[in-house]
Image (cartoon, rainbow, N blue to C red; front, side):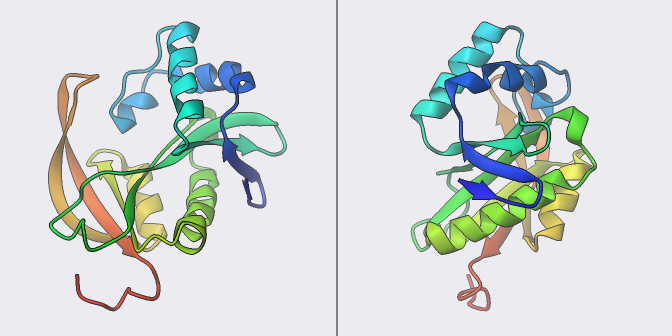
Length: 179
C-alpha cells in the first residue's frame, strides 16, 4: 500500500466493484486509455477479477471519500531496442471523470514512480498518451518523462488506431547514461 496526502494506492479488492464500475461506465474515460467504457457491472466484475489475480494494476482510493477513483499499473511491454538492457515497465493510469483536473493523478504518479524505482528497482519507466489527451500529457511532462517518439497504438477493443506520444523516465542513478 502506498499513501499520499489525499490518496491510498493499494491492490484491488472484490468490494471495489461498485466504485470501479461507477467510473469505468462513463463514456470518454476508458476511451482515453484505449478501452471502451463498461456496458455492465458484470463486465466490470470480470475485469476487476483479472486485476485482483494479476498484481500489476492497483486501485487509487480517495482518502476523504473512501472511494476507488481510478487505477494505475506497471505493465511488461516492449518499448524500444534497449528493452533487454533495462528492468522496465510501462505506466498506465485512468481516473474517474469526477476527479479530473484536481492534481490527483500527478500525486499518484509521483508516488508510484518512487515505488517503481526504489522498491521494485526498475531502471526505467515508459509511458504514453494519445495525442488528443492533453491531461495525460501534462501529468507525464510534469513528472519529468522525456519525449521518446511518436507512434500509433491499435486498440483491439475499440478497433481503432490512435496517434500517440511515447516517453521514458530513467532511474535517477542512470538518468545521465546514454540509452
